[in-house]
Every structure is written in C-alpha cells, then in structure tokens.
Length: 121
Image (tube, rainbow, N blue to C red; front, side, top):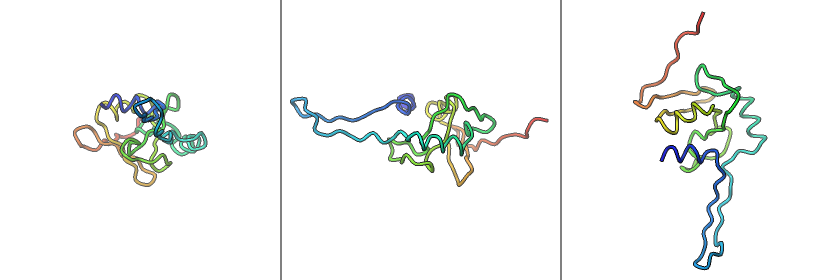
C-alpha cells in the first residue's frame, strides 16, 4: 500500500463514478497537485530536499506532510520538497517527516528521532 501511495503522489488521479449505463455521475476535482507558482515558492523556501545533509535540487517532488488521501491540503504549510530517494524513505520504509514552523524533523521507522552529526571539517 505504501508503494502505491508514493506512486500516486506523482500521478494525476481523478475519481469518476458511473451509473449502470456508464454515464459519469460524479467526477472528483483534481486539486492535489500544487500549481506552478506554489512549486516555485516551495523550491525557493526549501532550497532542495529537506532531508538533513541532502539538499538535492534535481528530481524533487512536492510531498504532502499530511497525505492528500488522508485529508491533507495542498498548501505550502503542508508541503515539503523531497528528492526521489527520501520520498521513497517516507512512503516505503516508514520514515516520518514533520514541520514545526521553519524546522523539519525526521523520525526513523522505530520511532526514534533522526539527528544529524557534526558537519565535516
């Protein structure tokens, strides 16, 4: 299920409910993808992947901190820029990411906080 959730982060999914004759009865809005202006602001704010020590700027995605399928809004406060590797850590390996103001905190799958070591000399 987590792999499907990660893959759906990058896909355009729209729910279409049909009646017995195949006529569309209800079509869900596609609002989960941030508009281009929001992606630009996210890239400006985060400057790259927010995993400590990464900072990759290529192959990044706008990740919902509270997943869209669980009611998370597509707002700057609920988005973080992640590279594809760290995006996979969240969705497939149980890592968690939170944001408190301007600070992002990561939690390992066992529940312990991820802390960075000292910077190299």
